[in-house]
Image (cartoon, rainbow, N blue to C red):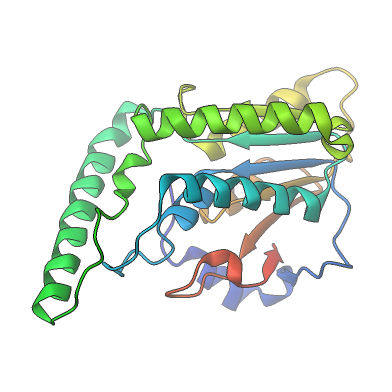
Length: 242
């Protein structure tokens, strides 16, 4: 769950903790963790205010898988690659999420109505319903199968993926993606022989990852995220480490 404007406040208050990542100067990391829902949203509706935007489901899947591979090739984790998708949220949060889905549906309908009133001609076909990015939907079931096939193929055929342990937590597993990641870090730390100097890299756009990372008390942990540009897909901007 995001914290509105928190990252912007952190960036202005403590600018020295943020470092732009260059392809030839990426720090070494042992473990890479992806909070996948931000990637799914940015690949399926990069500009949620544009009622004319259309994209096929196949193209969404291709963009997501390409995004994952790009992040893997950038960081090249040595030990663990963890991919987490939001599952069923705690009951205390379900009401808030339900209200949010209704609000998004109304906003999308209003955007289409306004565009028609201004004389815009909407392309044929229905726009992508971003409420489909919810645990248990048919879209998420199909995406889950794509992930499993993709991971199986990469682990079988790509030597760089074979050099680390790949863990996938899908939408059937309860809990938000960022909390699944932190649960794994805490579990891993409790195991005998854990190296306290393990270097962790978390990817995600939710600002609460900053607080979760600090609360982990891991000495070597970084947050990878893009600079979000309005009306453009987030990954068009340069990645930054926090």
